[in-house]
Length: 397
Image (cartoon, rainbow, N blue to C red; front, side, top):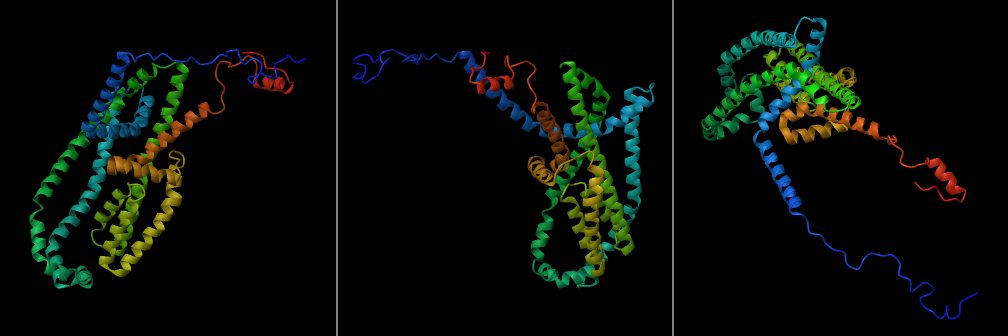
């Protein structure tokens, strides 16, 4: 039965009852001065940290290189320490580093003798080569004559002499860079040695800050990252040595002069991902074409075949169990690393990208589809859905 007059009320029943709603005016509390000062302090600390990183960028790069080198040597020291219980870690590290120094010295000696002979021969032949080139004789002279380089040199002789006279400052800069490189090498060597010796203490001290299960998980992820670094460094060195030896054999068989120098450059440039092998092939190919056209064709064919073998046989065989990255990730990582750190970034881009991938996969595996440790509701979702389908309200939490 309808109440009389209810139909005439335009607001309807219950229109005069005030429902719960937001207050008309919300009081604004001022931001505490302590919060403002804390925010300003954080901003200033961030700016100071960025300025400090910019000023000590070179030292940070040395520390990063030393860390990678220490991680590569770490398993060998651990193996010696396990095999020889009486050998202290400092002694085992010293033995490993002495062996590395002897190995490097042996390789340098192996290459130094033929390289010194070839460099001496080049120094003796250089005046004759220059005279032949100016006269248009020999392979270099004929090449310069065909490309009209001699005509250009004769027409711009004054400019070339002026440019050659202004090379004093770049030469001093090169000497300064070489001295800095020697200091950097010694510093990295000492830093990596101390990192290997003090590594177990640093790792144990850091992991002691976490619970036991969390510490074991962090140690497992760190071990995977270390294996990635070790596998990449050793694999990349092995591939470069193979490339250098094969290049030397091909150039020596053809009879191209200074084959040792060219092969050494090819081996060093092959350490650079993606572009290094191409750079070495271009230099070796130009040297072969200067010698003769058939030699250049043979060298180009060799590098084309070798690149296919390296990309489809050597790299998958060596890197398959250590660095598992698709080509797009590798390219993006190298481009970003080169922009940030130049040539060093190109060398370290792949292991850093692999470590980031390991950490991201671990985080995803830990949080994907796993329930929280404690219950978030008294009833399971299945019970709640069944109660809803039966027309009943789910029980309160």
